[in-house]
Length: 535
Image (cartoon, rainbow, N blue to C red):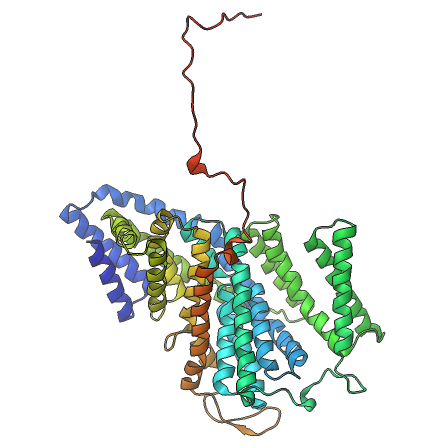
């Protein structure tokens, strides 16, 4: 019955029925069939209430609404707009500078929001009109925006990594640590692709014209010297605090950043002339999100907070930042809470449906069928990884990452562990692979998000008043193809260089619990025992 259940589920999902209800209905239907055929006893269904209560009582999943709420508050409070404007001015003089700014801000938003929709929509609304205004190729511009938004899937505090850690039975903190380096490497690959396009086809991503650079000095200079000097001072201060005063590196860097922020605020308030306009704006705009990243990820990595507690602090910090920028009102708060409640309910309903389906699936030994099927593949662990990644890649055409995580991942965990594969590394690998589910034409959600905010027909540019051609759906799809290829390359790199994931993990005490032997000597007989005296 296990293969029939799996095929039936795929059939109903392809028909477009809601995933949560398809899982629940098929699980209950095949439970009745299994009981009638004598494949398992009705007593097995008595475990269903406990499984559902286990979903509700799962503290790890509580981090999902916290990080979702944090991301929505930050996206709607204008932080993304400030970042894109400032970083665009910073990289503007370079060919492809706006594209670099989008990738950089996408990574920064990923590390603060963890929500793909918020990142793609923000950058699509803000950056796409500017890139089109200054002559960017429409396929490159749309591809960069969609791909950079999906970095929120792999760079902590990613919601996907929370779900993967829960389904694989591993620590969310370890999953976050393992994903840091692959996330930055993927960001570097995006930058490398944009750089190669500017070298071989220079016209696709021109530099900003001088009149569009608003943070210049009165004498016409760009102000980069002041920024470089400030960065050098921050690095020197961090090294002094770390090596001379023996501070922890993260605390030394945090204090140095705070001092730079205070200097920038004082320079702006009292017109001291110590910093250029560019340096002042970069520090003022960059420090709040960096502080939030430390508040969330720093406290998790150094062991001060669990991911759920880090998410709660991040949500609080996002509200405080919105208040400090005078951008928080009741309408924004209500909208963020409404979207958070809907997304959380969506996740929980899928998980409840998955628990109902899996109970019947395991009852007919479906897990053993999948395990034997995967362990029997030729090539050992490498063959297993190749087949699993190809399977995930093609299923991502039709299923989103929540559906993949709740339906497919639990079936893969046991065979992977039986083959000696580290589940943290395996989870990060699958996270990178499932990132393509947002970029697959024609069903990628990031492409839908961008399509919803990109101008489709001709429109009048708000700044120049010139009539501009819109972006077609075909251009969005073709723009995504190179970045899907980059993500596939990233999957291969994680397989070839597992140290990218495992390097940041705690090594433990180096003792393999499977090799520990406990020997107990037989106790002496009663006759040989020494006399016992009481005083």
